[in-house]
Length: 273
Image (tube, rainbow, N blue to C red; front, side, top):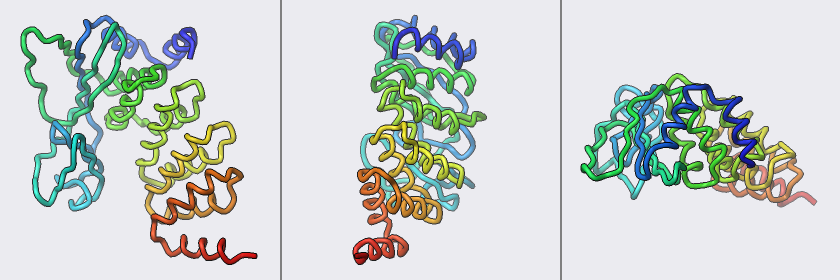
């Protein structure tokens, strides 16, 4: 994307407060920039390597009464062996900044920042509004073809009081945006529960203007949906999609599902003249 396009996107899409947040990051000295914002309901974490979604009644993950999903970083985590306190926020983002640009970032939920050594280059921007954080992070994802841009998608999905799925859908369709961030946008769309998310993902697969990588990521995201929503969509794609590579991906994920409807499709394909 050209510098002119980046500037135009920022002026149109990013409110003034988010632009100020970006400017504060850009003028920070090389090192780490920290910011925090409120997490949406149902999100919690242990402040380090665990972030859980769709929590209820203080329980998270597939063993908890609230159901939901849990992701871990830097190694495996077995909830049958270790318990942890799951705190409902805030979202904490640590940005590694060099020459005014975000090179990478880390996301945490809960916990508290460790006081850095006196000689450490750490700039703490404090607590910002969720809306400003989302606009800043989406701007980063849209313009930075780097780890930082790719990693900016996760904290966007955790923000309180902001409906982010339409924004992620626009990002997934934006052929000016870096490929890696578009794939991340599709992945997190796939984590959105409900029929609306399934419809949007199926629309992405059918979009003639999207490249094969993004469509295949959308097929994978459909495979992560509840069976009653995802399997019928995958069956339709496997039967009718005009691109052989997309049909093969749908068949692969149907094979992983163990759903009887998938077996019926395989029988139909293998026995037809």
